[in-house]
Length: 177
Image (cartoon, rainbow, N blue to C red; front, side, top):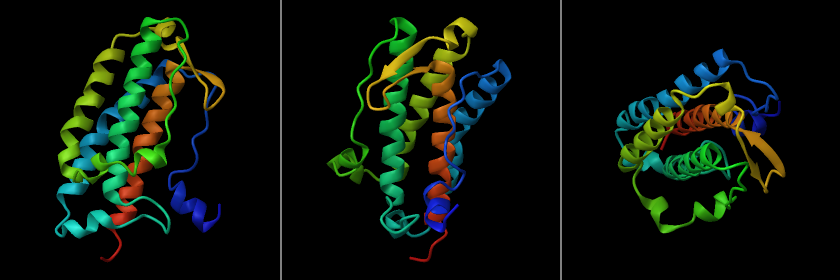
């Protein structure tokens, strides 16, 4: 792994599995559920608000953008869970993360985002809490990825995604201002 890869993917790249066990799903749900509290703990430790402008790598997003991205991304994921739970293989709408990162709402301070992120995660966890194997095998089609994704794969992806960006925030906050 190159040094730029190590900064871009500090916990490694996501590897989509074709089959996920119920034990792995439970672990993914638990990890997903923990992200908001872990992130909030990091953000509350910031003494100088200018640190929220730190990036985790040259050309990468700053802390404020990463946190706002988590809100948008995980909100989209919640909608995808809900659509796939209630429709037969719906087609989901992709979006341009980098374009969204330039919108005015990305100026919302990170700590102000935490209630929204916590609520989104709570909704996902409540939604999926009583699902069985058949429910986890429901799926949606992602036209950007050009593939069908099961809900078991989606919880694995978003468990990874939260931890991935949590590490980005840690890296950015460890830099001097």
